[in-house]
Length: 469
Length: 126
Image 1 (cartoon, chains in turn yellow, brown):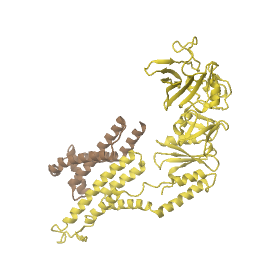
Image 2: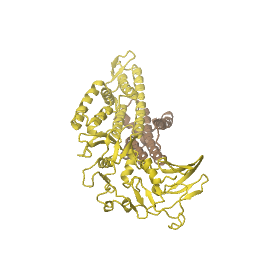
Image 3: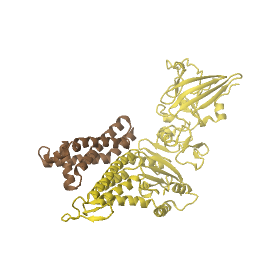
Image 4: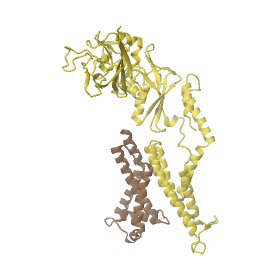
């Protein structure tokens, strides 16, 4: 008995699987043939065919659209070659004519990685059946992808009649930069979206992607339109209000290494996103993105500007060195400290300081001074390394380097500055300060998203998760 | 040129910001200035060509080597003290010498403040 491929697809729900270790099976009364499509993030890599006990590996050759154009055996010679015209119709692989096109022996997938139903001259695009001769789908597209594109108004057309540029993994909408975005940020694999490593399921009932936790994800589904020229995403056509995607694009133009994190729903049921900049001081919170978008600068709103932690060892050594150096021998005040820890006033004209009595103080002061300078040099290069590694932002680096320079070479005033700086760090790491800071940001957060409730639970969860004392 | 830098750094640490060990301080600060410039150049070039940057101990190592060379050349040999008596100038002009020394200092400060961001942006762009 032969299982027709399209029946098999329906029964096995193959719409959820496109070239991601896809297994298909064709059987006769005696031999079962299993075909495994092995893909990497770069596309299809190999095909494993198991017939009975025999397993053969073929290395796949694909074109830029992901169409399979050749299978090579282990020796590097072609086991089979395929060719398709612009619209996906099979043609002869050597002379590109439609005459005497060899029927495929090994696999049933081909054009843009989709399954050919050669008995019917159709291609199973998962969501809909496609006729490569007519260049049209057999059923109408439930989605109007781009309201301002007349090509998109034909619900039967394939990839807005631009098959060289786009592909249609789902059978519902062409892949575009918008999908590339999903791929980059949400692990979109052509059909499914993975958010934080969690599978977000496509729901044909609601025509959207559905997060198992958050439910229907507005703006993530193929509804709406991404305009590559203005680099904006319009969830309900071009006249709609700016979306999270637009916010993201805006933020992207400001920062360099942004990350984009959905944190749940806001009070109005819209999605809330955090768009992170390269440091805590650059970034935006975007919420009400599907209703009344609000973009808030992180610098004034983000809950956790917890600084860079308490002082580290070089801060204490540096401060001690500055103080020690001035204490043991101070030109500013004309004082020096003896072995008995008593401070003496220098009397240049008299006999108090003369005769090498301040030698100990001077030598010890020099020791402290050089220790401070070496720690300053170390601290400078450490700060540079931290910035290159992205551990601190530019502002913080400038503040650290300036403070290091001033406290290392600034004499008594530099020492005072350094001590003040480190004392500030010490104080901000104390519990009472953290509590006051928490209350401040809690009130700010509450004024923006409302008191904790079921509707904004995710936002408050985010608040507590990210409040770092 | 180096002698001129040495002399005007020395004047700075005796007249503007007096230090009780001016020679040692000059050697330290000159070495640090040069190490910042050299480390900055190495960081940018390495990031551009190989996609890597120097780690802190490698940068400190370069600083240490420069300091050692400066110590041997100017302190141990007694050349530093000789320079102070010779009072070298560039083009026999006090002004030009001061300007060039200030420019060297400025270059060092720029290297200190900018090299990390420049290196990072090159690495991020790769």
